Length: 388
Image (cartoon, rainbow, N blue to C red; front, side):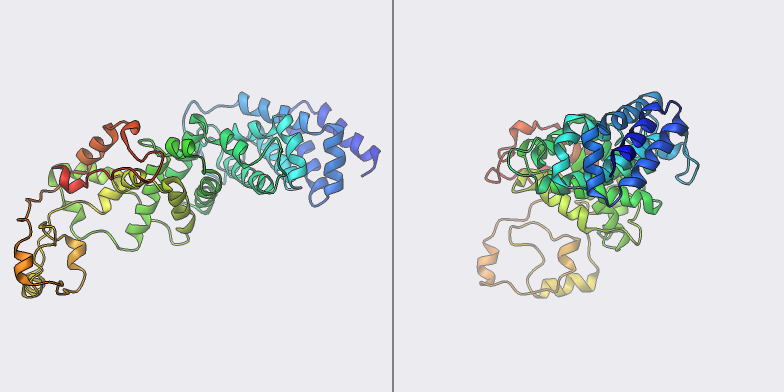
């Protein structure tokens, strides 16, 4: 790229005063450097990042939605405002530069480009298209950081430290909890889950994401949506606790759409839980999971109950009554004599546990009290049924 072309593009960026001029200058820059590493290098060396970051920061601070989710203020297909157009073009320009690979990470980090992109992540203050562009840019940055040489100012750990702070965690949570009513929102959910699975490897980050009403609960809500869409809800879940029907209805998510991908959700859940049995228990006692897979009393059909009684399996090995999932399995005789089984402990009284009471009880415990919060060697908390 010649010095004259570089100077012209920089002059156009620096002289743009109105939002429309800034958007046009950013669009021209983006179209000029797409697929041209040498042009990117020349422009970055000439100082193109500073005006881009300045435009992005100015457009982000000038337009707020007062805490209201932009997805409920306007349809994604509407014409974007001038400020949104500048934000979108600026994020896409930075994303295009970042696609050049790890050599571009030091200047992007030094100019505050990564922080400026993170500032446009919140769906409360940005349009769906801007949020999607921000997630795409962060994904490209993660690709570059994954192959960054040792000593790079922006590796995966630094990128994770920048992302997993309370403000951005709340943004990720809002993205994950959005109703996937269109392909754009579903793409945001997939990208957010992918980012979590790629960057959340530090134990402190895992603890931050598994706090009550946080990322882990949001991922559980998405997982529950797949359970509903596949028709795998426990029989009788909708009336398992008649005293808490309103609470249960509030916790049941919408079914996952047909084109939704479960793999990114499962990967993110696996990474956040890690080897911690305590965080696994937090997932299982999430409101959405308890809503579709409740701890409930279950009375099987007479024919099914008779088959299990003939096999001597009317109760489980530890003396507790069998649940709905147990009766879905074919009756298989247990090893050992009937006499040995009669010596087992007498059946305990089972009682339906409300979704709200179990969840509040677990969430009321301090995270510091989880013996395996830092590892998988701690004691497993009591099961929901044994808490009654």
